[in-house]
Length: 150
Image 1 (cartoon, rainbow, N blue to C red):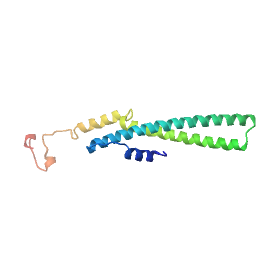
Image 2: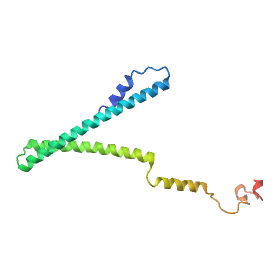
Image 3: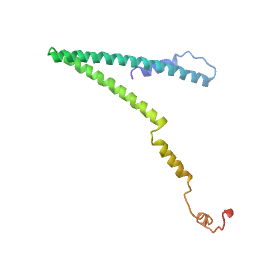
Image 4: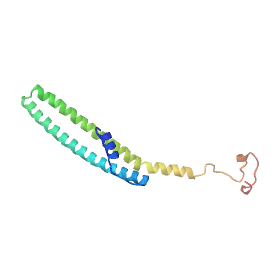
């Protein structure tokens, strides 16, 4: 999104954190950056919501003009522009939801994940060779009479 790179650079360089320990300083910088990003995202979402409402009301008023037959060429251009902006906002919102879904899937998996991993675990704990293990000469290329001699 526009302005994100500048926000991160400005926040990182102008945080005002002075700490002798480098790890503590790094931790505090990351915490400060996280808070700044959260605030920025909240503002962007609020602006996006306002813009969406504005263009929806604009579209409805233009549609009323079209229904009454009083629309001009400028109204059709404004309608096209509002539709484009709404499509862009919907695309950004869908992209955000898809990213959240990928993160949730990576953290939690789906309803089949626990079954899949349980099956793998079961297969790894069961012995591969089930038979008479008293003669393991096939492992060493020589005859071994008992397990204790191995």
